[in-house]
Amino acid sequence: MKVKIEEWIGRPLNRDYWRDMLKLSTPILVYGPIYLMWFILIEKHRFSHYAVIHTAIDDMIPFVEAFVIPYYMWFLYVSLTLLFFMFSCDVEDYYKNFAFLATGMTIFLIISTLFPNMHQLRPAVMPRDNVFTHLVAIIYKSDTAANLWPSIHVYNSIGSMIAIHRSRRFNKTGKVVSDIIGTSIILSTLFIKQHSMYDVITAFIMAIILYLVVYHTSILEAFCKRREEELAVRYN
Image (tube, rainbow, N blue to C red; front, side, top):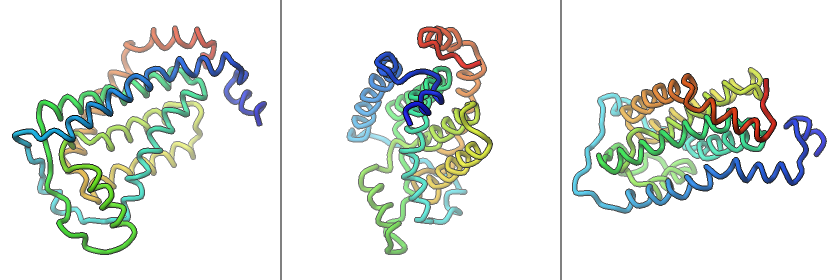
């Protein structure tokens, strides 16, 4: 098993490998706590005014509790995609995926701080009593109906789909599976009434802009090449 993993990664699983993993994980270890603390602060703070987000399309979308499953899958989908690139030493894919996610998440925090927002889409009473509605209720209890724009669930799912599509590690089947998971997560935000269509559309707009910045400019190229040379794992 170890030999196969080493062949797949392209380097031995020795002390140097784990040292490099620590270096690669530094952005996550630094940014993660900052994001969580900032998010918790704005979630607990009660602003004097919240802009209510709503579109006419929201009223046409039914509540479908089964979509809570892909909604929960988001946590694994996004985190495992990023960690996959890190542990496989795909330096460029890893740093660009991280930069895409972190930039969008920071913009979300700034917007939520300067322009507090909320929605009133959640059903007052669950229309049915089943395991899915119970799972939705857990989300409603732990996550307020404030600070939702743009949707990070949607934005990060797009980021993971982009990263997987650009990776040489995934074949066509893997990319299709990723697209199905990502698309179901995006739809879930609407069907369990966690987000307005406005949140979803603006998340797509932000994703398009930052995709062009992160993947189609030279901003990160020099940094990624330098890190790849340090780790001697550049894939041509």
